[in-house]
Image (cartoon, rainbow, N blue to C red):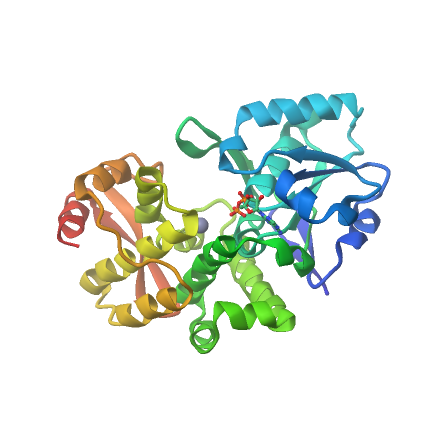
Amino acid sequence: MEKIIKFSNASTHFYFDSSFKQVTKIAGKKSLVVITDENIFKAHPAAFKGLNVIVLKPGEAYKVQATVDEVIDTLIKMEADRQTVLVGVGGGVITDLTGYIASVYMRGLRFGFVPTSILALVDASIGGKNGIDVDRYKNLVGIIRQPSFILHDVVFLQSLPRNEWENGFAEIIKHACIKDAPMFKQLQQESLSSYQKDQQKLSRLIQRNALIKTKVVQKDEFEKGDRRLLNLGHTIGHALEKEYELMHGQAVAIGTTYACHISEQMTGFSQTEEVVALLEQYQLPTYADFDRKKVFDSLKMDKKRERKEMNFVLLDKIGRGIVKAIPMKQLEKIINKL
Ligand code: ADP
Ligand code: ZN
């Protein structure tokens, strides 16, 4: 199924339920350069036959300028020019890198994504944020630019490691919490393995989530309003991720739980137990014995801080997220009591 989504100065063609083989038709075989990582390349060798492929080392540690330089060197050797289309086949690291490189090489090439992890399918590949990490600052340098296309081929998921499934479902549950109460109910009735066993059910879920994210981004491409809702669980989550070496999804799950507790005090939210139960149903952690001071200090340094208060995503009820500015002093008190 093809769906064209218009953003402020570009459109993205979504090819849901598609086959990676279509990519040469979509991007044009001659000018196509694929960027992927070793894990995906090794797990699906046949998929890449006959294509120009740049294979990178996997992991967030490589989402840095040195990798950008290395890829640009290779593109120069390949004589890539303005007609070249870059296609990132991989998880969020690969899509971020590909979008960023495509945005700066020769002042911008066309690019597309084939997300291969749940997290990338429902979240990272959508929204046009492309960038790299600098020192310990995630996504410090980057650009907002929409891909020309995003192609979904769930066949890639067959090789996705178990913990990456959980990682992606943390974002799916986040979407349900902020925007989609019926999906929250559906998730309660299913499990990780029931989705893994039923490809159609999984595809439908992925599509629904990709569209939730797309709609939010479309309304607010440059993050002034609604897009902030997508940060549910991410404020405390990022702080925990930095301090305690958790996986992103685990940190977000714990962050979401704390956001629920804070919501109880700020909005009268009364469904924390249901959210916690759902996160646990999908094998996600909901508690961390963290150092309050350390995490609060890390929050203060968050780039989303605005003067003496912080925009915090809270829940009014399941399916309805809201953003509220909380004074830092009050937030400190609440966190100390969590
Ligand atoms: P994200 O979690 O944002 O998608 P990554 O790009 O780091 O971030 O992907 C997470 C890990 O999962 C990486 O080690 C990557 O190589 C691996 N991975 C992604 N997709 C697949 C896949 N379909 N099969 C096997 N490994 C995969
Ligand atoms: Zn996230």
